[in-house]
Every structure is written in C-alpha cells, then in structure tokens.
Length: 222
Image 1 (tube, rainbow, N blue to C red):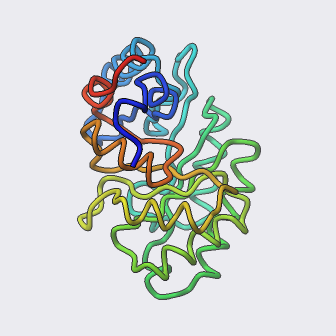
Image 2: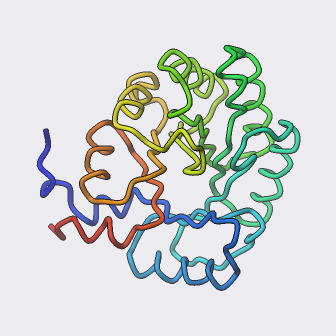
C-alpha cells in the first residue's frame, strides 16, 4: 500500500471538487466556498444549480442534476443540465434513478444517462450511482451503462442517502469496471486525509469534499 506521505497535498488538491450542496446554503455561503477553494488551490467547486452563475476565477465550476433523489424525469434532469451549462457550469453530476438500478432495469438507467449526456452538450458528465444502496452486480451494470452512454465519470454518492457514502470496496469495483475509460469520483463521508488516501489508492481520480481544508491538512506539502 502506498504510504500516506507519498500522496502530496498538491496532488490531492488537484483532484478535489470543493462542495456545497446543503439545502440551507445561501449566496454568501457560495461566495465563501469559492474564496476558500481559491485559497486552497483545489480543482473545482460544486454548487447547486440555483447558485449559478458564479464568478470563480481559476476554478472549474460543477453542479448537479436530479439531485439528490434521482427521481426526477429524465427530461427534467436534461433541462436542468442544459440550463446549468448555459449558466457557466463546465461539469454536471447527475443522479440516476436508483430504484431502476435496484430493479435491474439497466436500459432505463442507460436512457436516463443518455438524455442528460445529450442535454449537457460538451460538459463533463459525472454519473452518481449511490453505490452504498446497490449490490455489487448493480454497481457493475450501472457503471457499464454510464460508459455506454458516454459519461466521463462514475461517482459513488450524493452524500445524502441514508445507506451511506463512498466505500473503498465500491471505488475499487467501479474503477475495475470502467478500466480507466472513465474517471471515478469518490464522494460522501470523506472527512480525513486517511480516508481520502484510501479512496485514491482504491482508484478514485476525483474527490468530492465539503471539509476540504481538514482533509488537505493531513497531507504533506511534498
């Protein structure tokens, strides 16, 4: 296992989506998030679509669609994604209909992703699968559907599902399934440097963090 000290703070910062998706968040909270992200030197921010547009010089702007339940009609998710892109989002994290995945209706999952993929135009598309709520076979099938649909990432969790957030097992399985063809975003419950390091070693190429400062503080500068 790669030692914690070999994964530098700078390397981790380049993988971070500094995230604010709480329903009670205000415009002032979003402004503070952006300022903190710029200070910390992370890659991106992720905010609710109602916060767009934002001024975030030097940062990638990401948002969500169908969040957090995934039970929105696919066309609604698509419209939300298109509107977000028109308002400056470069990346969209969409939530699948988890119930379709649990029921084994992977064609429905595929169609859902395809609609958002088309609507999001050239934006980076991350597919949130709620891995903690799915058995392994469904995780594999949903990741395969995301790859077929032309998504750019598969993502573990919204962070709002009662089943939990990211796990090392899920990230390993997702990374193995997509085989480098897609990125893997670990998100949900990652609050320490040790947890972040475990996700990276398991195959995560992006991290969704709300407590970014505390996580980065656990990594050496070089």
